[in-house]
Image (cartoon, rainbow, N blue to C red; front, side, top):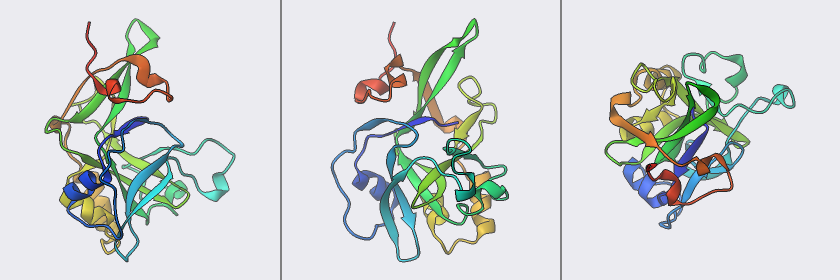
Length: 218
């Protein structure tokens, strides 16, 4: 899945790693967002044809006909997103969500109500880009099966794209069929990630700060 994530670096760091310069300026001050939750305004990278833009839009999206029926979903399954009627209007609008890592919660096998949060990031320590879709009203992160490598933490994970594929995904000139191929088979494999338990303070959306991503000590 992906229910919380981290954007702790500056937009300049994320953009430099992507290797595609956005239109206008971008800030070199660290974002320092260590606990981004659904419905929050999030910095994303979009390309609407005139070039790469940095926008702040809400995490969560649904079509107008679904408004009020349930909370807007925050994720979309890569297996069905291209053909799912629910995401038909959002699918053509591809974007990138820069991140440093994300959190997952693992239930205690002896007590399902007790859950231990884990922080997941690239072993290399490099920034990452989640594949997403959305409009000016919001966005969702595309998720894939964890393919056995991350099942001990969660059976779903965000589709993370390396810079070259990330830029191609965001390019509106990329054909829809190629875009679907990128997210279905081009995501970074689970072997590139590492994870460790962190303190339960991350469960409260009001908590922020770098201490949230520190490994839990006995």
